[in-house]
Amino acid sequence: MSTPPPFTPPPSGPAPLGSVPLGSAPLGSVPQLRVRKELRWRPLKAGIALAVVGLGLLVTGGVLLNVAQGAAVIEGLKAQVGNSIAFQAEDVTYTLVLVRADVLNDEAMDRAVASITCTVQFADGTAATVDGSSQFSASSTEAGSSIGTFDAVAGPATVLCSASRPSELIADVYALAEERTVLLYTSYGLMAAGLLVAGAAVWLIIIGARGRTVFQT
Image (cartoon, helix red, strand yellow):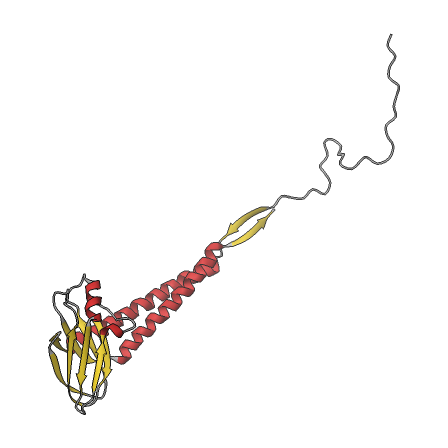
């Protein structure tokens, strides 16, 4: 007959750390956090609103610029490039515009403007030169492209525009007219403001789309 193992009493004192009785939850457990991204609606909505405003300013400025150049083409004196225009000058600023004859050929229009040089002779014996290639940026619309401007001396005057290279356009006609300064600079101001507002709109939309981090239990 086998002898039963000797009886061993249970250990006295507190249970060792980490031992948890079966069926009970661990003490001091930390709840799990969920992390998610949330759109920032306030800057997003503000950005969209500013984008609409900026687009409106750009469109309005472009329309005014088109009106200014269109008026110069319609109301101005015109001649073929290579021929002169005699006019009675006033003490104001005049603009020279290459009339758009080929709607689809923008690159040829730009090259034609860059090749044109105009010489203006005034009644007092002085002269002015307008170089189409020296413009920082030629204003181009459906009516034409700007060659440049000059300040006139009152009295009889003559302007002659000539090209340094053969033209690729259907017709080479330039127009001379008084510059509509208020209308022109209003259009430039509106377009500049539109670009600034559009830049701010893009910044706000990016901030709103990136969103923010939200922690949830």
